Amino acid sequence: MIVIHGGHFSSLEGFYEEASSALMKDTDWKVGTLDGFDDILYGGFGVIDGKEEIEIIWKESQKSKENLGFNATREFYENKIRQGKPFNIELIQQKLDELTAGKGQTLFEILVEIIESHANIILRLE
Image (cartoon, rainbow, N blue to C red; front, side, top):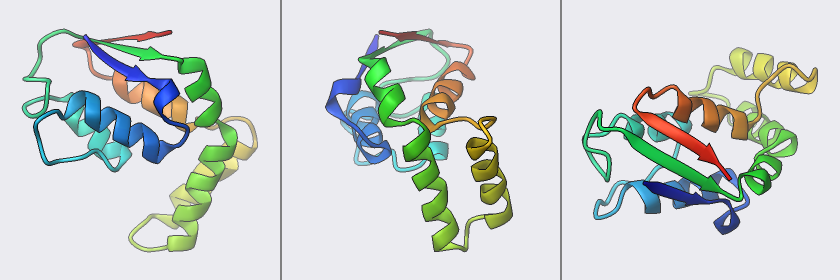
């Protein structure tokens, strides 16, 4: 069982720190991107060995849902657009437009989707 404490962070960077603490014990590698978070859930390093069944409990998930909601997601996309390369600006603008139109995913929803895409991981939001 792995516990992510939503009370320990209020930003995506804070989530990465919390996920690194929970999932990457005794390693030098830290989570720093959405793709990197997905990668560690495949296992083989950190606390997940491989395809064993894992339960992740996300405590105070409602707080995280608010912290990683519309405003944080809009800022996330706007920062990538400002940075330009190597980011695909057209794709990011499309995602920002979808978010603004009420059709896009928030960072919280993206993180939940990443976790749930791993068949061996059970996510419990508390």
